[in-house]
Image (cartoon, rainbow, N blue to C red):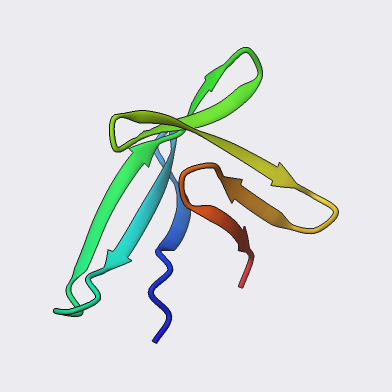
Length: 75
C-alpha cells in the first residue's frame, strides 16, 4: 500500500489552494487538509503543521517539491 500523502493543487476564486490527503496506516482513514499558497519575496510557501513549508516547481522535470512532504510528479 502506498501511504505517501496525495497532493492536489487547485484554484478557488482568486486563491491557489494546495490539499494534502494523508491516509492513516492502521485505520485506512483519510485526513484531508487544505492550505492557501502564499508568496514572500518571490518564493511560494504554505503554512503546514504550524511551520512554513516551501513550494518549488521544476518545469524541465515537471516536478513539484514541498519541503515538508517531498517530491511529486504530475499524473
